[in-house]
Image 1: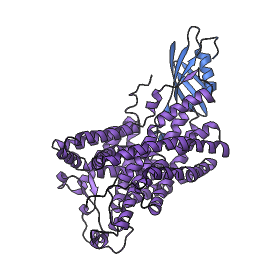
Image 2: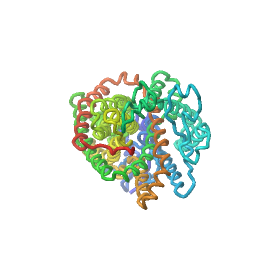
Image 3: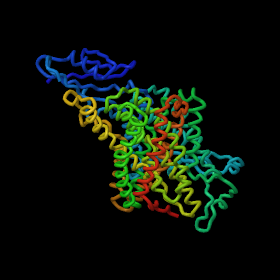
Image 4: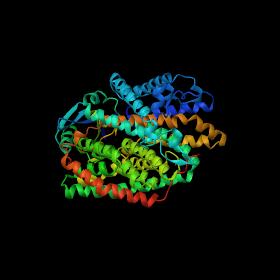
Length: 83
Length: 498
């Protein structure tokens, strides 16, 4: 299984995923994931994509309450295989 | 890039409250070996205005807390206190990526406001209670004919009023203080110090402390199992909010305020604008709860100290507001009971009842967010095969200051268990941490909370604010009080030594 790390942010009413030469954005998280899948799908194996939210995008007064937002792993199927 | 269990240990206020709290606690322990390195901490003294006006001396307002520093001029002790605490928090602020110059300037203003409130709040016409104890009337002894009888709650009320005045009537100044107005950081550090207090309290009444801890854990069940579904249903069915907004609102209103709103929103992958908007409402309502509930419970239920404390822990959201409300309730209830019965309860137990309930609720937010994430991915988003969340998220969402609180408590107990002589020396060595240092951080929290609260922000919050108000008055507060009554009714704090 291949592994990729992306940084997730929310700016100007859009989700963004950046890293490893990838830079995509979409208004909905599901749409963003489809863009990532389209760009990262490989022929040979499933790609494991770690998405880590960059909390510096949250207002600074809010960060004192919780330093963690949404992190998850996206599994991109092999090219030609639908999930 | 992969986040490890120890990631961010110097990058959040939460962790820095542990480092600062434990570092000062460790420094205080040096006194067991000889040197007292924390006794320079300045402590305010009770004073009466005609006495100070007739013959002024700084020592009538404040003095060094440690006996070994009795020869220090009060202003030198004050400056040392300022330099040490400003330095420690500035180191943390630098590590957090804050503009250190702005932080130090802001902290200095908050520090001055805190101390002005603390000193003024110790004037006897504000604090002294008209009570007769062992045949002696305290008013007569102090030569007073009138007073507000607020006990040690008076400085807290002044600090809150000063902070709110800045936050609502001097908004330009409040904006300049924003870097330093971090109530959660100050209160979490104070909570680590409270772990030391709890250690000392546990030695006096271990059964009572254990009972508070267990019932606090039981109350957590109530918060998650009753409050959350009721508020979620109210948000969905009565107010028509979308699933993600309703879930974030339910956590913010019914679990642990802003941190729950952020954790839940992250878990269900909501857009960050949702928790940001809801958090603004949570912070303002927490302030309203802080202003109203301690006075209300003291007036209506003066004979239920522990019930009142635990009910606060379940009702008041955000750690800062809950601990601040608990501290205020503690002081107001002690003063009221003294006035009514002539008996003085030991300080800190009502606050502990409030805090131990809230801490359990905080601890389980990680588990709750993890479960919500699984439900959302599998049942709501139907992405079970494509998306996964690691159980490590529970740890990342765990409130780290709770570790500091329990470490301080267990270390205190471990040292004290070596014998009565050691226990007595330990109590003396940590007295400065237990009282003036901890109280100063509570005072800072009151001021910082006031500075960060702008009631005008409620405008335009419409349905969210309405739902919050209804849920609080109709669901959260009554159920919380009922549950607290069920678990704690009749429990009384031990009496203070004469």
